[in-house]
Structure formats: structure tokens, C-alpha cells
Image (cartoon, rainbow, N blue to C red):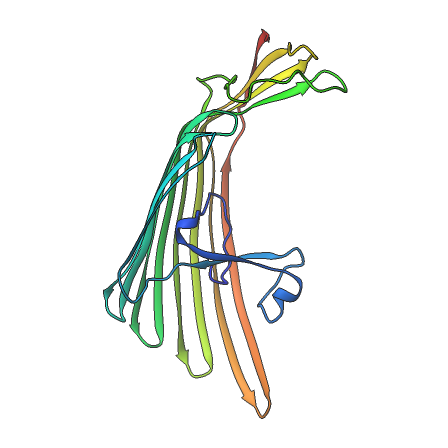
Length: 269
């Protein structure tokens, strides 16, 4: 869920818009509308602040060399009426297996409060990964470990790189149109595209490190879904008792394009 409303996630929804994430399961799901036996991940969004705030973070990992630069901004645009919160994150660097790659993420939301009874929140998140070298997988030929290798050297294929695009659009509207009643609406579109994808496999690897190299290549594939929920909640108090009624309808439409993978054997390696 996002802010308690149903969301069918297909692409990534990064940290730039997340204030936190709560797992609703067991006791933590008490009084939570429409819980699931296996639990629900409920994302709480960052909301615009009452004054301008800019936060910048620079990170680096040693000895791997992974770097990250991020900036988050939250500010009122019209006091008590319209505000903005968003951020950007750029990660060039080297992975744990010394493969290179770059990731860029941008996100933002507006919170519009036309009056004390209504608020509208449009949001957008985009993540772009490019030049991402694939981690090789080692499959031993028997019940033994392969020879130890130098973890500071990338031994995959430099041409086998991944490219990805993830987008999430959303609109949340909620308010109290009638006394004792609260109306909420959430509409989201989540899209994941993988322009190209590879798997690097060293099969039948012997104790001396020799084996055979296979590369599995996949053409562009995608997964896109539109989902949403409309919920009407009523709260009524009689004496020492409070009664809560929830009525909701949900839907989703998902389209996926996949298949067409091919394996090429490159022989001994």
C-alpha cells in the first residue's frame, strides 16, 4: 500500500519519496483495514515541510568504491495550501563483484490543500540504470568449491550490460465530504522496462577453476500495471463505543511482455 491505499508494484519505488515503510502483520495489523495473512508493506510518503529544507548527502564505500550523491528538497510554495517534496540520487561506481554501472533516480510530489477538508497529492518517481555490468555465476561440476579467485578483478563480459527504466505515477486524494465520513482515492501506474538483459554462467567448473562459459541474452521486456482503490470510511460514536465502517473497491490491470531468450556457448573458460 501507499499511504494505506492499494498499490500493485511492478517497477522500483525508491527512497526519495519514502518517509518510512511499515510491515502490517500480526499485532501491527490490528485496526488496519483489509489486512493480509502474509502481511502488507505500507509506504508512508515524505510530506512538504512548513519551511524550506535542503539536504545533501555524499557517500563512498571502501574498498569497493561505490559512490552516491543525493539531494532532497522540501518547501512550501503557497503557505498552508501548496507544498513540494522531492529529490535526486546519482550512483556511479563499482559493485561488490567489481562490475561497473550507473544509476540515476529522480522523484517529486506536490501536496495541495484547497481547504481544511480536502488534500490532493500527485507524485512521480523515475529510476534509470545504464551500463550495468552483470555479475557472473559459478556452477561447480561436483560437490566441491571452485578455486578461490581475486575479488578485486571483474571476470564477466564487459559487453553484457543491463539497461533499465522504472517509473511510478500516482495520485492520492482524500477528504471529509460529509460529517463522520472520510473518502480516499489512490490511483497508481507502475512501469518496469528492461532494454536488454544478460546472465553470465560458468558451468561445470572444476577444482582448478576451468569450466565452460555460457551467456543467456534476453531482448527488451516490460511489466506495466495500473492499480487503485476508492475507500469510504465512517466513524460513529455511541456512548463509550466507537464503530468504524469501511467500504472499498480495488482494481488493477497488468500487461507483461517477456520471452525470446537465447543461450550462446563460448566454450572452455
